[in-house]
Image (cartoon, rainbow, N blue to C red; front, side, top):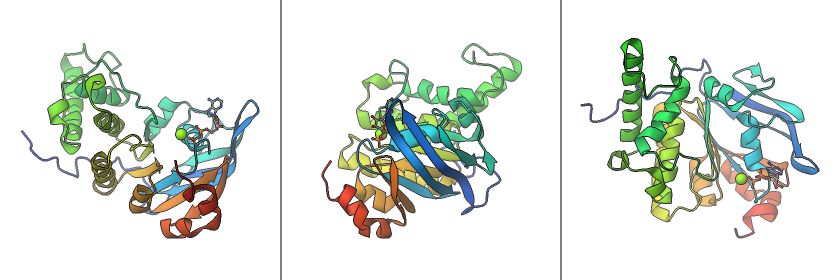
Length: 274
Ligand SMILES: Nc1ncnc2c1ncn2[C@@H]1O[C@H](COP(=O)(O)OP(=O)(O)O)[C@@H](O)[C@H]1O
Ligand SMILES: [Mg+2]
């Protein structure tokens, strides 16, 4: 039994990008739904190794932006460059293979399945030998299955959720469901992790736990993180840089202190309660 996961074992896969270099570029992206302009001509970048916050009032276009980054939506204008490669049409499962994983604003797990099986499901994208992994218990498939189980156990240790490994996630309190969802995303061993309001609906203690896990993922695994979050204390504590959206437009971009002092940001966002 290994008691503590070795951080080197948990490293994000080497994506060939040096720390601090450009990992992902959003270039002049516009996205509309019928007449609704969700995103208007937005550009920003995400550097390897950073925690990048995306903030803004409800309806600002934050979730839509994550959906463009992970290939769920194809923008009418503009493009995404990931690891130096300009993206053509892409589907979310291509994004996962390229090393982009995400969690959702409303938890999207298999509620009847256990914590363990939900996180294992995140591994399925990594499995070479087909999708019917539960049934494949012979030869090379068995070796692969064992390797996947070891990775999943590492993640369960890392997130301190051993006690709920067999519990159906629908029975868990919301804060723990969010942690399981993080586990599932980590099982994909992403180089870029997208988190859509990972602390929404959490109490203070749960927020502190989640903050610590996000920092550990970033520092121990070297995973680059883009984070949508409403709690400004959390954003200012966690993030290296912040991009601010308002009505689908970018109104500020910079280090937390500069963004906090920006008049447009204060007017649009920081002054109002949510
Ligand atoms: N699938 C969709 N169909 C139509 N309109 C959408 C869709 N997704 C988002 N929108 C609209 O786009 C705008 C931005 O939404 P969203 O990206 O969810 O904002 P945020 O995450 O910042 O709250 C909103 O006006 C929203 O109603
Ligand atoms: Mg949203």
